[in-house]
Length: 82
Image (cartoon, rainbow, N blue to C red):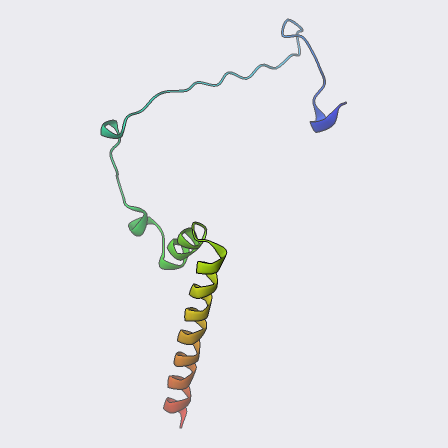
C-alpha cells in the first residue's frame, strides 16, 4: 500500500476501479431558486455562514457586539428579578 491506501493498478485488471466524473456547464438563467438561504437556515446557521466570510478583525468586532448584547440581556434579567 502507498500513501492514501491506494494500490497502483492498470485499468484492464479485473479488480481495477475507475471513477468517471461528469461535468455540466450551467448558466445563471438556467437555475431556479426554490428557497432562499434565509428560509432554509435558521438565524444561527446564517450568522455562522456570514462569519466564515469575514476577516478576523471583523469577526472580533462581531464578537464584541455579541458580548455587549449578552451584558444587556443579563442586565434586563437582573432588573426583572429585583
